[in-house]
Length: 453
Image (cartoon, rainbow, N blue to C red; front, side, top):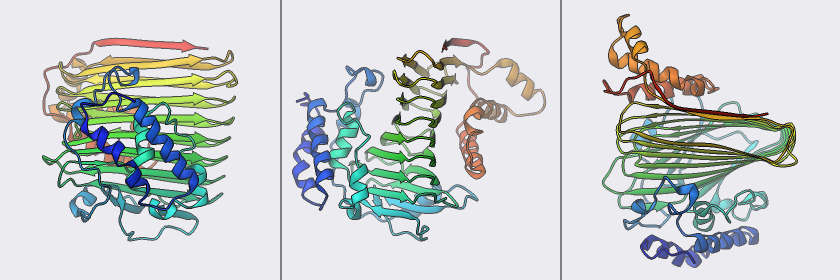
């Protein structure tokens, strides 16, 4: 068993497992997965910096407070938070969660898409067939913990060949009346030939109470299906957010993930893992993180090419202000059978403060001999010449700075397929750019580009 003596939350969570397991009727398969999850978590415990995957992210300071772990909530939906999560002019089907619990929907979704809270889905045959099937709970402790003790969840299944006419907007609102540890979960199954877009927006209020969110999303994209998955993280100070996203793709499918992390939450750790399980799959990973104050934003991605004729494209960009710290760790595995793989990975960072820090580590592990793969990383600062050029044409300093940051982020934001969402994110980026900064330089601090062909 892992040594977690200094973390009271560990004992509380492990000790509550049997009671939590007994509170809901569930299939044998789900029950077995949850038992395996708690056993694995007992072995691994909360990750520490001795774990290479958590080298730059120390969870211990965020786990010391006493937390309530009761997944039930009597908190009413906060109208201000729901309004904050809205994307102007975007037409969507909206589902609202309060501390992980689904609220009554105001608009019915089409009949070809099933939306079920976990309380109703735990005995569902299709739910059991997919639950935890692609999540490596032997290796990832926070995913194992969620599998064992998830608080609430939502099961979404879209029928074969169905096309959702507008996005499904899932609004996660969090209100902490006391320190709270919650573990929401989402399971999405896109059947053969289906097409859907999902937007997840995470919002919380800034309070003295601490909120720790350990979420897990599983996405299964069957043959010829298309899934666009947008994640917008705008939670406020006092929030600690760990997300685990596990994706499985079958042949001829397309999955695109867009993750945007903005100032507010003290800690954001995004774990994004894709398994390309059949041939001719296509995957796109786009990320933009804007860190401020003492914020820590850590993006860890893993793309596992298992079969031939697949392609993945990953572009992550970071803008760091104040004392913020950014981490990017991207891994691409090309297995022996994955011939004709085409994989690209790039991480670019812009430092707007001499106190900001970035740790970037793109990685390739290739076991096939007929592939085209490349990865790279750059770190730089704003250009004096570009700022002078804009200001000499009557553009104010703040606007010039915002324009340059938006231009830097363009490679990511231009990939958004929803125009209203793109405009909304560009507006959010501009709103967080400070009036002035002392560090403006054209120098590229470090640049690494490695190709394998």
